[in-house]
Length: 424
Image (cartoon, rainbow, N blue to C red):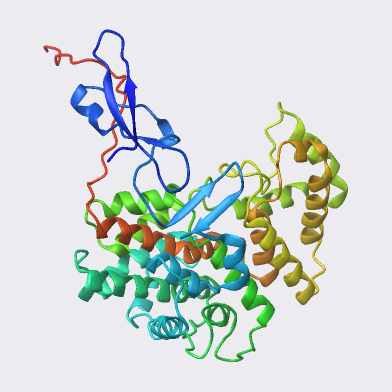
């Protein structure tokens, strides 16, 4: 039942009554589905004022800097929960009991290996291929290896696919990195945690297996947690749209990876390091800060401010703490990292940035952390995709579990009217 009613008045036509719904949080929503029968559509490029679905998973209030997963603030989850607990929460709707957590962790660990034949799939790629190009291919190809549970109308099949994707994504990500390096691919180890296992597969070799630093494993886990879901963003909406056609979950997640690959979406932390390269030296910071303030200069300070958050990014505070811990642990003397910290200090204290709420965001710190750990820039979006997988799966499963329609946006047509093919 509608909570209220709105009325649309179009000149020369009878008023149209539209239902208005209220969620548990956030602004009211006007239901415009009935407009089609009246011969009109709404026009909303970028879907900035359109709710494409009803969801119980994640809530964002950009004005107040709020991000909740199933009602839990992201900073609390990052401080108190690990990534797999966050995955369980997103998928199931509630935090796990100790028994449920132990079972879920064990299930994930027992599915981290990928089909051995998948290794041969990598040989079709050039060694210098972009990691995201390979990830799109190999994740989509999983449906060819795990086609025993692709009935999207079977809840058990959906759960098996969810487990497989969350478990195998870090394995595939590490395989992509090892392939680009020409190194042997490392098998996962079940005694390690999710993030320890990822770092093991990334940086160890058959010749030498070094212990994984607890500080770096914690940092990696927090990066995964802080990227786990972000409501109806471009890649999540892509996963839902692909899923609305009835496509299998592996194909849907591959579609999400493709959307994430775009520099306006998943490439922001890469852009931070490219910006630091452009600035070059601490002595140039003042000049580039001045360029950023000049509205006629195209230069932008990447990693400051956020499209959604108009106050501060609630993930950034936790990420800054993690960044400080990692740099202290590694004792790195890197000019680029020194430059980043100096830039952060200036931007945090400059009235221009403070008045406009241009605070460092999660991408600013995550790029610095990943670089410090030793992960190359071209792998950053792959890390993002690994962390975002439970969010994608949760939204896909939520949609498939209830009534849904295939996505079919409308358009405002401005091309030629009907015309006849000319006579010869």
